[in-house]
Length: 424
Image 1 (cartoon, rainbow, N blue to C red):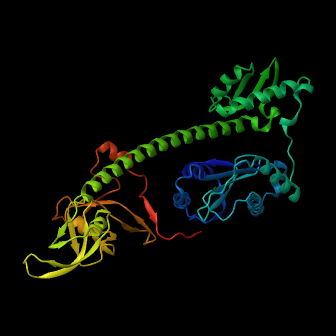
Image 2 (image 1 turned 180 degrees about the vertical axis):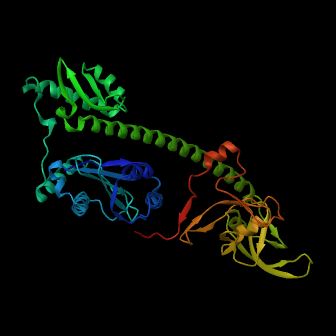
Image 3 (image 1 turned 60 degrees about the vertical axis):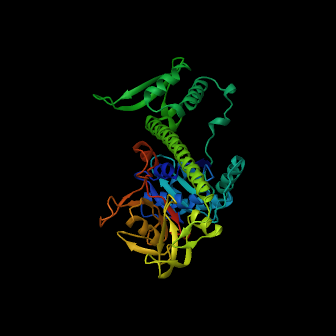
């Protein structure tokens, strides 16, 4: 039994990797598990409570010896995974346990949220030694097979051909993580003087096997180590390619996040400057009612107030109503109903204030109920003409230039969780 603790940034990349075609989802806790996208979304929703954490993804691959393959039922593997997490202090959080069937070694993957159900961070720093001890305890408890460790073999005491075999083994191990295809491995091993001979299927370019030679002594890949048969090397190439793609995607997402943060910072600065400018302009009068400094500040902060004894257009009738500002804070709008109450309008259930803004010709970032009222989403809604019966929508600000709008546009609607709860 061998385990490794990995921290990562992207639930999408990690879950997509472990949930590949042919994998078996053995258990899921605290996530919607109907499909892969639901699992990713569940992890992301809980992770959103601690956005300052840069590596919220916990990933633990656990492999077992081929000699124990006959014992590795799904239930037994889940039991081992849970015992491992418990002994490593990983609990009270979302997780999935996924079994892979693509190697001779039975193995599984645990993906868990390092942001636990209480929004506390699960730390796995400096757990290398504890991981080794936990694996040993579980192997002893369940009488699992101890594998032969080539790293402990004393090379200086070896004689040929074993000395050559271990030299080739170490050379392959050194360069393999950077190889994504057979040509990469050939060129990388040339620096160590190791030659490769690929065996091709008769009449085609399909590789069936591989052998390695150094100082005129040759071994098949599987003779050096079972993981160096061509079938297993091919899986390593694919894994390395996926890892490079993941790093590229992470770099792209990081760049997008930085650009988005800059846009948001610029927008905050603009709004702050606008607010400061308008805040200095005190004693606003609404329908004959002079506002206090506190009332005006409440409006400038984006909230609403209730005004009494306002004068209607006829100059005689007095009335009372709620008042709020448009997004640009240049116009006061009135309503007899609480502006933050929700009303059905078109396909969304939105705040009354957003409905009024749309009907008055403004582009507004509306607050709408999402997932049956469990969450909120914030689409931009507006009418091209006031007389239109239907409004238009966009998940990015339509007032921005096209290039900035594409950078701002999210892949999924941004939602704000209303009530946190664990679902399975």
